[in-house]
Length: 382
Ligand SMILES: Nc1ncnc2c1ncn2[C@@H]1O[C@H](COP(=O)(O)OP(=O)(O)OP(=O)(O)O)[C@@H](O)[C@H]1O
Image 1 (cartoon, helix red, strand yellow):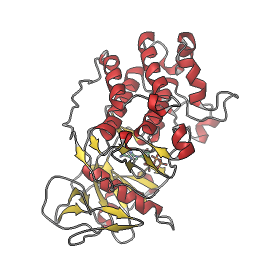
Image 2: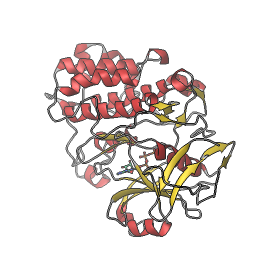
Image 3: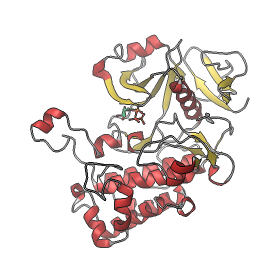
C-alpha cells in the first residue's frame, strides 16, 4: 500500500491509493472505484475516467476508418472527446493470460503521476466491465517509425513507387527529435525517484506533434527500478528485436543503461534511415549496430552511411559529434554508456545552431522535476 497518483473525472473525483501490486494481484485502499481506486478529494489535475459508451461515441463506434495503428496490445483509434478534444484511443486486447491488463495498469499508474512535455500525456482511461482503454493526447504526425520506415502500400510498389508520399524528415528535424527523446529518457531516469526504465524504447514509441516535436509513449512494459545505481532490476526480457542491450537480452539484468542502448539504436536510425534488423540486406549489413559501429569512428565511411535523403543538409562536424554520441550509447559494456543527461547536454549545442528548434535547457512547458514513486509501482512481475 503506497504512493498516490491522481485521477480526476468530471463527475467523480478520484485519487488512486495504494495502486500497487502484490504477486499477481492488486492491493487497494479506501472505497473502491472501477479499478479499485479510492474515491477521495481532488489533489491535482489528472486522468479522466471514461465509460465505454463515451469512447465508442468518440470514435464513431471504433470504426475501421478511425484506426491510427495497431500494436502488440491492441488497436489505436482517432477520436474526439465530448468536449471536442482530439485523442488517440487505444483499445487493449486482453489475452487469456490477461497480459494486456498488466500493461493497462502500469500505464495508468505511471502516466497518472509523471508529467513531462516529452512524454505523451494520458488524458484518461476506461475500465468498464471487461473493456480496457487508454486515452492519449493525439499526436498528429504519428510515429517516428512511420516517417523513417514507411510501409509502402502494395499497390504503389506495383506502380514502381519507392517512397511514402510524406516528405522525408530533414536533418534539423531529426536532431530535434533526438534531443526531445533524450530529454524524455533523462526525465524518466534522473528526474524520477526511483528511476523509471522504459524497457521498450524504439521508434514506434516516439510520436510526433504538429511541429514534429517528439514525445515518448508506451509505458505498458516500463519498470520502476530499485534505488541502486541505475535502478538495476532483474526481469523477464521484453522489448523489441534490434533495440535490446546485450546484457539485458542475455541475463535479464535491466538498468537505465538498457534504455540508453535502445536510444543509441534510434539515433542510428535517424542518421542512416535504416531499420535495426533487415535480413533483406547483403550479409554483414543485417544488424544496424554491428554494421554502423566501425563506420561511426571513420570520417569517410561515416559520411557514406548517412541516409541519402539528408545529403547536403548537415555540417560534417555536427555529424561527427552526433555519431560519437551514438557510438557511446551502443557500447557493449553498460557502464561505459553515458547518462541521458550527458546525451542531452551534448546534443544541445548541435541543435542550437538551428533557428527553428527550441533548445533552451528549460522546456517549453513546466517540467515536474521530481516525482517520488513507490518502488512497487509498475513492478509488474514480467
Ligand atoms: N497518441 C497517439 N497519437 C497519434 N497516433 C498514435 C498515438 N498512439 C499511437 N498512435 C499510432 O498507433 C500506432 C500503434 O500504437 P501502439 O502503441 O499500439 O503500438 P506500437 O508502439 O506501434 O507497437 P507495440 O505496441 O508493438 O510497441 C502507432 O504506431 C501510431 O501510429
